Length: 335
Image (cartoon, rainbow, N blue to C red; front, side, top):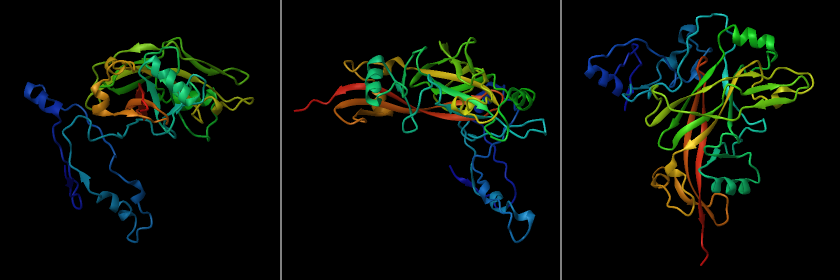
């Protein structure tokens, strides 16, 4: 790993990824498309007050050292740029986690807790004095992580007219979501079925049912990171709209017109699901922490921290979900 000297001419540094070399060896290597990203760009360096004029506004950005190209799959672009043929787009969708509705899991210390088994789930609900902070592995009708797609701006009223004008008519509706999870810890995901709905009633109250969640199996799409599997979750129409009686932002995390919403729960790898009376998986020791008294007292827990990535199928908006896969490991014995 090294930096490229781009203080002079523009440099194109191209290398083959591991998959590229494999296809070259097989005789079927062919470049069909390209992507752009701005991972290493610090836009705050754009200086409109440069004494030499507008031609030098972006000089510091253009001369910022950048890393050489990587050979690992998807290691170079974490924040890809998108292309839109329309020139009249004033707003683009973002993804936001919803922790407002009753069945939406909430984070604690910015992390979603996923209990590997029912024993652990019970311990966590007691520790948190609430079930809102606990996801239980493989449960299809319990808490879930909610992710919304929409225009997060207060400059547009969140009514059905603006939803049609700014999302549907501009082809920015995320009808599905691509979800990436680490296969070492996550065996599968649960996502909504076609009968799910997410809306508010005429009196402003929430009318939401995203369960039962359905099994979503990994597909053959190229993963974004080593060891990650790719899943697809359908996008349910987000029909929460402006209401004079109840502020819709008490139901939705999106301030403006809303596109769709999905929900997910985790199916942890079976090796991690052993109860406290059984032997722990070596994965906890290798990738996480063991025998931690994270809530104080004598109760011990093993856990692994990982990240789930969610991306809108049309908008390409992406967000990260920090997840702690946790197992109750018994209690310390006082001597």
